[in-house]
Amino acid sequence: MQSPSAGFPLGTDQFGRDLLGLVIWGSRVSLLVGLLAAVLSVAIGTLIGVTAGHFKGWYATVMMRITDWFLVMPTLVLAIALATVMSRSLTTTVVAIGVTTWPTTARLVRAQTLAVETRPYIERAQALGGGHWHIMSRHVLPNVMPLVLAQTTLIISSAILAEATLAFLGLGDPTVVSWGGLLQDAREAGAVSAGDWWYLVPPGIAIAVVALAFTLCGRAVEAVLNPRLGVSR
Image (tube, rainbow, N blue to C red):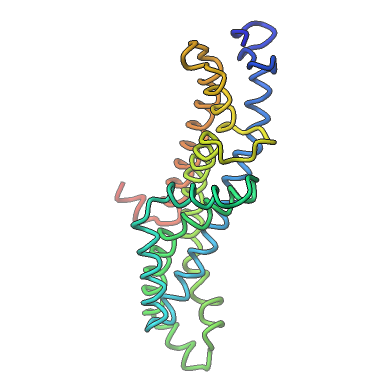
């Protein structure tokens, strides 16, 4: 628990390990989990949103009621419940975050799908014999992809924060180093009561900076892909 010095710019932990190296090394896990969880979440949301917007009827009603149920339930609580009943691993963390954060994407994609399917070229494709898969894959999906891309960058920041929260609560993989795991180690080592700020501040700042960076990237991508939004701002 040495304070920052020339040899250890961010100090050391209770085991004598260099905290600068741990923060850099832990970025791999935090970014990996954030990216994979965001991809899983967006994939589920896009699939449900496109199909619900295209088929309508009872299928859309059932899918949207399931989406509404996930929306009203606290995402973090659901993720904690999944992480508790499953084995503690990175795969569990990715699945717990991915399967609980897709409803917003599903709602946005469904709304965009409904708007796209009112355009004349969709009617022409149907008149020429285009099937459901052809219309969804060749006409609807390319038009909703800009929205999906922007939503992905926004969800990455939320996924990184969720991973840090789960790791801080002791629900992450104990065999890997992550920013949330470093905060948990600091809490268990008594860094808060002892005033060892160098154990708490670096991983906390890293989480905040990366989450903010992906959020700003998401807003920038959204403004580029939606010129009207950029003009209104």
